[in-house]
Length: 150
Image (cartoon, rainbow, N blue to C red; front, side, top):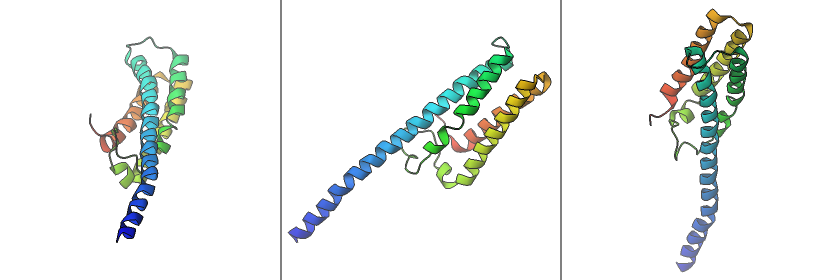
């Protein structure tokens, strides 16, 4: 009997390091995606201010900010790893239950950012506001489904 208890306890003790490592990995994943989304929000905020007239319009700066959002928009997705749905996160668990739908939103974002950049580079001012709204709509649509309220 005592031998059985020893084996059970050894088994439990051996399981603790992997569990702690998984928690650290989940925490790292959450920090990674939060950092990426913070950067996206920063640069998209600059774009928003420029489009709405709260900041002077500067087409080269607008293009640079769209390019930065485009680049940073590639970063957060790998950090939605299994096990990172718990912790200090605003990610809804549905992300892991509806992966294909979540990936479709990612693809839509990349598509709209590409169009937005092309419109900005072309200097097509009437189309610029629509491209901005289309991009913003994709972000908001994903947030409504996959982000928890604060």
